[in-house]
Length: 140
Image (cartoon, rainbow, N blue to C red; front, side, top):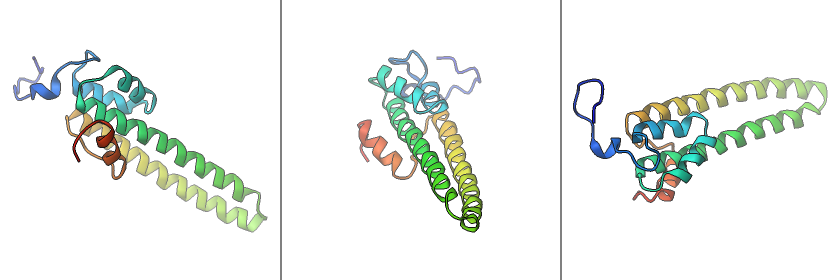
């Protein structure tokens, strides 16, 4: 298979095409782009490639976890927003700091996952990656 870079050191197992018709590193990367939507689609399409299935499971769980964390942050902000003004003001600052940290962590993990998936690595997000490995049939 031509790699375009002339390096000639592509692992045929990692770049083989299966149910998606895409190279596994491209399909793995696509799992994270609009997770959990793209990852669920790739879970349905891809039945054989362990790399793609691992990344699809990890991206699905990560995507839903991000949605859940954002919802909980919003809910806590709305709940503390109805408290008396001084407590509400403090909670508003706390919610802003929490949302900023949450955003930085989620985007950092998302970028790392995209890069590692494209490189053909099975980098695991703590806890989520172990569960994804079990669901995709990999030995931990």
